[in-house]
Image (cartoon, rainbow, N blue to C red):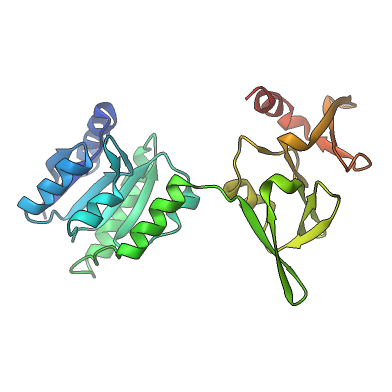
Length: 256
């Protein structure tokens, strides 16, 4: 069965590569249109029948692709192609078959197309993306990193601004905040998730146990075994070591 697709991508080389890969994977996938902006996409959807499938880049030349959903009805399932990380994309599932991180891998693309085939066999029409969902996703992409965290203290709730945090650490399968004032607070989140939700330019995971703030680093000392010891303001007694395998990456991070 012929499947009509639309590719929305503002990078010519990326669009050409995607189309070539799609053709290699399935000759029955026919590209009906190649669009490169929000404005041209809106005009196309208003003037043409909905395609069977859409490949859509998130960041287009004239704005985010979610503006397309806001300005017209997209009744087609979508596979997003994006350079954004998984965290931002977890905010929505409606109207989305899958997402692919650039540069697109042929095997991952093939898996996404197979997923579309499976879902399409049991779904007659995609649901339009809800306006409130569009707004939420756009806010997350434009401001992808947390600026504060909510901590529970018994029956009370406290907010801690990111700039007041010296480092995060794990202890006995729990995660804690150490503030610049030297206070510790338990969190309901893992260090792995914190790496995704905090600005990588300001925080670095020096080891499995510690995730430190750049502005809180007081000193860095050479340590045995080709490692480094990080001294944190207000927490000088803590032995925070940069893992051997992360030393090179850590030095690059310090350089910005």
